[in-house]
Amino acid sequence: MKFRKLTSLALVAVLAVSCLAGCGGKEDESSEGGGDTFKIGGIGPTTGSTAVYGLAVQHGAEMAVKEINEAGGINGAQIEFQFEDDENDAEKSVNAYNTLKDWGAQMILGSVTSTPCIAVGEETYNDNMFQLTPSGTAVECVQHENAFRVCFSDPSQGLESAKYIGENKLATKIAVIYDSSDTYSSGIYEAFSAEAKNQGLEIVAAEAFTADNKTDFSVQLQKAKDAGAELLFMPFYYQEASLVLKQAQGMNFDPIFFGVDGMDGILDVENFDPALADGLMFLAPFCPTSEDEAISTFVSAFEEEYGETPNQFAADAYDGIYILKQALESMDATPDMSASDLCDGLKTAMTEITYSGVTSPEIKWTADGEPEKAPMVLQIQNGEYVELQ
Image 1 (cartoon, rainbow, N blue to C red):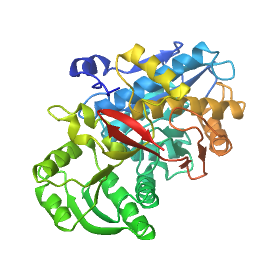
Image 2 (image 1 turned 180 degrees about the horizontal axis):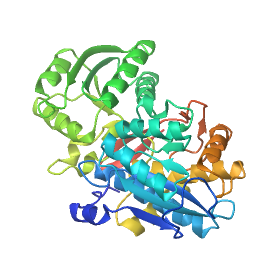
Image 3 (image 1 turned 60 degrees about the vertical axis):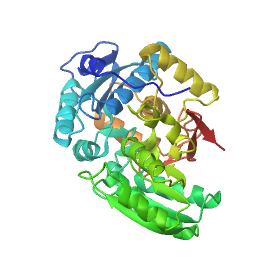
Image 4 (image 1 turned 45 degrees about the vertical axis):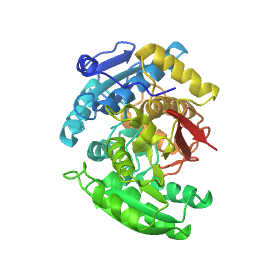
């Protein structure tokens, strides 16, 4: 099964407005409690260059809310869900948060991307509002006690990638190309480099690029090739990775290619030959082709509802809503509780639950908001994503 292209520009425009799922509620209800529904606010980009991520999160969360409400809700109470667009901009993300506060949000799912998530995190901390980000990977996204995440952090991706390469003896001579202007990429690289030493891996070339120079990788690739690299580690996004793979072929450089969760989507890049990605391995939280019953059920339902295969962002958000449900139920929460009281309860509840969902069969959380779960490594084989054991 190939990933279908996520949403067309026309559909993005239609869906850019804020979405309310579940039961209708009073628009002026505050977060002081007193209502008969749990109000969850979502934040992420539904317009702009990163809308593909925000829309996936919005849709994954909406599906979970719908399922939960149809099954009786949380402790017998329904959920209202409202999603606000932040265009992947920190200031607009804070504005979106304020809009959700005015609406009466009692907890936040988001923001989707790291920089806006950090900005919103300062506001939720000051308000003692519980925040669960499905996909904010920067360390600072969960720097405060009220913030938790579903996904791996940037350093954990680097650590787990190096461990997997070392423990499975994929290679000993490693080259790295990374984006020094991006905290996501540089954070993963730093953690990878540190763990590589523990795994007996030799980094023979470490070459950087920046946001202003991310179309020509010939110099970096030549240095990796000349250094005899057996594996090329790519801690960045699929758009740049597609160019790296194409240019590597042009210079007859064929190492093992290994990436991180930013590789998700590479098969759908326009004017890219998917065959070039054959054999690419990458760390990921979700495999849509898995035969696991829970995952296949989620994928089928998502495809039926939205006409596309869910990506990891949709899966993380789907799990995120169910994680909130489990934590709220474990603390016997009621919708008339204030956002602050819910936050105080959730800080403890999150460290006491064990969750099983589509992104992992078992997730636990530490008090610092980080998930504890086993990493998943996917490989592209004949145009399909295959989970490696």
